[in-house]
Length: 365
Image (cartoon, rainbow, N blue to C red; front, side):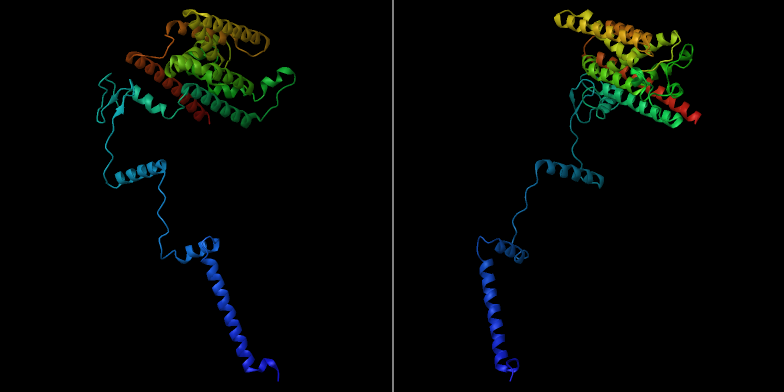
């Protein structure tokens, strides 16, 4: 008889398999009960997760706790919960600490919610903390160049620069009709009838090399002058010097664009500062500025297309402003109010000029 059909042999095999299972279970239990065993740690965690405590929660970091508190306070205020107690504020004009419910500064009398000082403080939160006017001029000039380049490519396509060494100056050149529509300075009496052109011309450029060189000079000397005079008066000087340059350019019948008239105005401003102060440092600065002016004059006579009269007009305007204005940031409340008035008036003039240009483009389209 075959062994597979023997009942006693089958019963013996079942007992052997059962005993092996018990032995394997005992070995695994011993493995998981070993204190330093990784298997023991993992098995005990999952086996006891619903029975025993898994430890305390980690404490939040102070920064994350602060963010959660701010979110909780905002939602609490929205749904009618207790609001955070108002805190004292700083005067936007003189910086004095005033009460939470005060509407006017007890030190200088400036309004806490309205007025040029409050508007300037609100605007400063949206701009870079250092040299905001310089970066604003840079941004506006680059945006207008990009818009004019797109309009040129759309109208006449991209054209490669001409041959020769000076062909590189025509790289990314802007069509004259596009510049005229965007506010280029034109011969008089057109600028007199359309005075917004005197403002817009300082923010327009004729080629990639043109804007690249001018913005390099702007970022080189602009932040220092802005720190010296303050952002509001610096912006006023930049725009007024450009207007002075294009008045002289338009009187002789030139079609002109570029921020170089305003930049020459900044150089003239620094030149005026060196004449009001004495010392070896002022003499060194004056000699460097004169060298710059010589280089610029040589480039104006060598390279065609440079408006030397716009440079001269900007230089004279900046020098005159440097003689009239105090070469330091505004200190007193009266000086700060006057500086804010100059800055906001200039900003309104620039925004109005941009609006006139946009309205003219809309009418044409």
